[in-house]
Amino acid sequence: MNNRDLISLAFRNLLRRKTRTILAITGVVVGTCAIIVMLSIGFGLSASFQDQIESYGNLHLIDVYRGGGYMGMMDGQATDGILDDKALLAIENIKGVEAVSPRKQLYLTFAIDKHIAQASVVGLKPEILEKLGYELQEGRLLESGNKFDVVFGNQVPSWFYNPKKTWGSTWGGEAQVDVITSKLIVTADTSYGMNQRGRQSSNEDKIDYPVYKAKGVGILANLNDESSYNVYMSLEGVETIEKDAARARKEKIAYNKGYDSAMVYVGNINDVEDVSNAIREMGFQSSSLNDWLKSMQETARMIQGILGGIGAISLLVAALGITNTMIMSIYERTKEIGIMKVIGANLEDIRKMFLLEAGMIGFIGGVAGIIISYILSLLMNTVLSGIMSVILGSIGGGGTTVSIIPLWVAAGALVFSTTIGILAGYSPARRAMRLSALQSLKNE
Image (cartoon, rainbow, N blue to C red):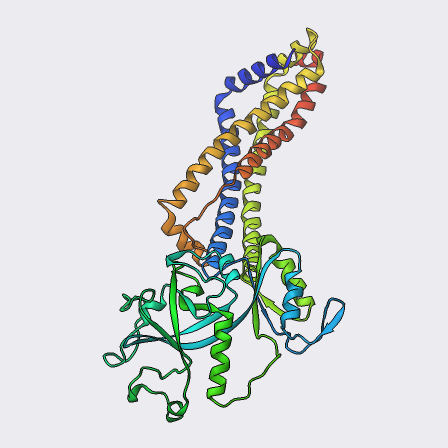
């Protein structure tokens, strides 16, 4: 018999015993659904973790800090962990690094007319700010040569307040000033613009801090990460304000001591871990949101493995049902098998016929299971999203997407269910092939 005849005969044999076939297929459907849905929840949990981490900041960034005094190696020479220009150049030469910038952070006062606001100002090289991928709500990012130009996080404009009318700024309210078109003043004097009751100390009044004319050039659109609460200025501008403030306080200015921290932008997110390790080997401390993400993803994979294992057990139980169905089929069809052998049917064809029947049960059950899995996934992401978010939230997830079924998972489940069916039918097929023709006819 050719393959087409074998497939047609196997299909008719399954239809002759509809109830038994449906029950066997139902077992495969349940097992396939269990595997796919369980894995999909694991993928959804992993995506939820990533969304959660991304809301805190940029996953391409690595924060680098002084080495804390311990010895490392850089270009074959020992380093005491000083984060100077030479160290930054070495970091920039690490494979995968696209941009490096020293970072200085000051707490400064901004003033527009009678309104003031205090915020943390991050000094960076303008080119790395472009790499951060920040979306703009208004204006533009910093450009080379913008010494005292600033870009505001979207929450900062609402902090401006008139100290003669109120005690402090509000959070998340409507901005009282236009930070881009208005004349802007910046200073290290934390009491600037305040009345006597609002001044911090008598000593602060005696310090004559310089006042700088600045310009607001942009407002970021990012709502959830740390950039919302910072102001960005060129590194040159922040260093100038820092040194002038130290002179005003009559403090010694430390030169050539290196930077406290730096930001490293890695082009490919998959290289972040390797770059972090390379930086640590140079004698510096490094941290990135990817460290958290990796830990969370390991948790998600563990949960995914447990859930997938539970689903696999269901499919293995279905395999036992297929085996039972095929063995019962042999007992009921001994006469048919005997006649096929007497009229000269090839033993290989008989084996193929039973394997095809078992494989069809696995394939049909797999297809139906995939369809139902996608329906269940859609329900979990829509109708049941509230309930599922509460359940997953108890283990750290609970994002907007509860279930994700990658195409390769559906294809793999179909191959797996079909393979399980064929393997379950292998022993009954061998049994049918070895059945004696004369003995089977005699028994009938």
